[in-house]
Length: 218
Ligand SMILES: [Zn+2]
Image (cartoon, rainbow, N blue to C red; front, side, top):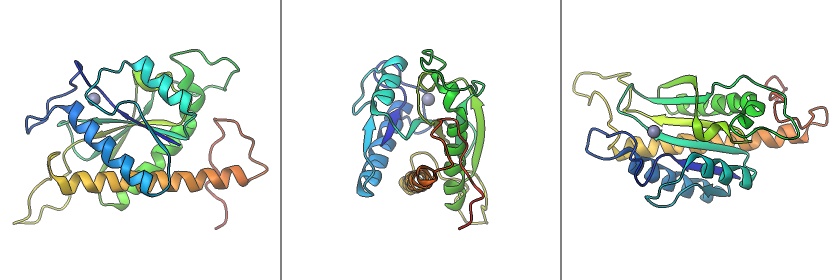
């Protein structure tokens, strides 16, 4: 189960993108594209919005927590910077407690969220996309009790602009949008198989902040 959270919507337009598009529309289009890629691979998807609707951060977290998601991606776009920015909550990792406080629930999941960001990073790099990793305060994510990463798509980095090559791909480039969505879908498939391995390991207690075992023999 994956939750796709197309950030902004309704009165909250998000940023303005260079082609005149509003960030809220870009985020929704990416959510729709990613949902169909995941559905085609047998991954269940719940979305926080399916239209240009206002959804506050409390409602977004409620949707994610009700879904008992294995991953939540909060989708953003920006003209600032380049490539894909991945943000994990800046809350300090905490032990899970029976009654997680609202607005700090994510603290018990930060370690898993960092692992999810690692899978996303690998898949994006594999698709020759540049990635920036960061930690920040994320209002919608802070109350989510699941691995959650904010994904902010910026224009493609100028990695190898040979003469005659287009220097960058803008956010309005359909091929670039498709590459980003495919890489995110590939990362979530990898995440699912990692989770299956972790679940199958009897020595791995099902604490939400248990780090993934990375050094297992193949
Ligand atoms: Zn945004």
